[in-house]
Image 1 (cartoon, rainbow, N blue to C red):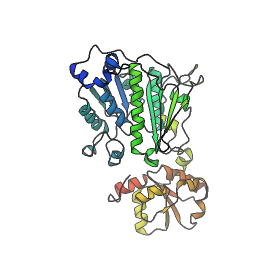
Image 2: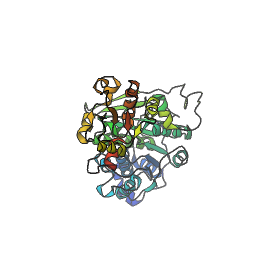
Image 3: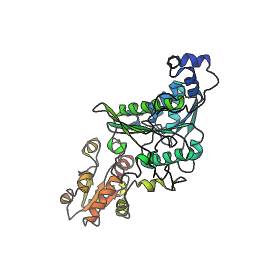
Image 4: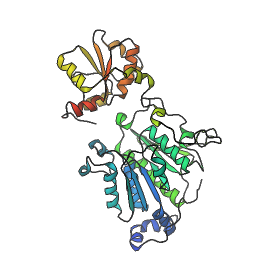
Length: 393
């Protein structure tokens, strides 16, 4: 489905701009008019991470006149495997500032707006209102639903992307012409069912594949060329090297963009809606969470504990807490782990950050191990607070 251009052309291109964008100008579909539209466009990239890195660099190189960057995180060494907009020299700096410096180096002819803040329900409508198009590079469901809801309420299109291990997805959501994200995913997945990239990993170059597709869609929307991915979900398998598209129809009963919407404003709590941790895990962890310092003290006192690492084997190979026995969370969920737990020792569970161990704790407590506990913060906290000599991931 062809759509009208999202923005009007700028009055003119300077000599420097003509020189810089000449390879665009000689494409008949883009030409002078299309490049002027890019110059007049205001695009916001939500996140300066895996997807945001290639998206921001190619949006800048393409000549998008005003490029907004919103991110509240800082550059960490583990980011550099895929977040190519950042450098060794910017470790510890705010990601938005680091990304802005790279973008300005790529193209000094554009305006870069830095939003060094967390996106939330109090600021999202005001920030989104300043832009024509949103490029969504977020990595959690709560923010994805919030981005979608804000875009629909403001009548703005946005380009969505998602990555995990070797798999990527991309689409364009624009309620005026097609479905929104809630039409595709009416409800978030159950807590713990879909691991984050921090838990499951992601092939670094996959970010470039999906991020560049997002920029391709953004350029088509801004200039009014081609057929954007409105009403279509593109699925990419990097291992098979295959692309396929699935039609996504607008849901007439969608609570946000349907015929009789029941969601007419932003939700109060998107984290609660998406449930990062299940209610059972939350209840199990209540009054049964210890710190890494508590665990260290238990070990030094020689307490008779059975320390269990519920991560995956490849994570255990990277780093482990001394004395921990590896039993992946999946074995707790299917029940096979329970026969390996001693009855005469206190069960202490840990994972990377405390989410998976809380889920396993719920299973263990339901099986009768009432005094079992889990370690809040997991091995990340252990490395940061107990033994910084260990590697982190």
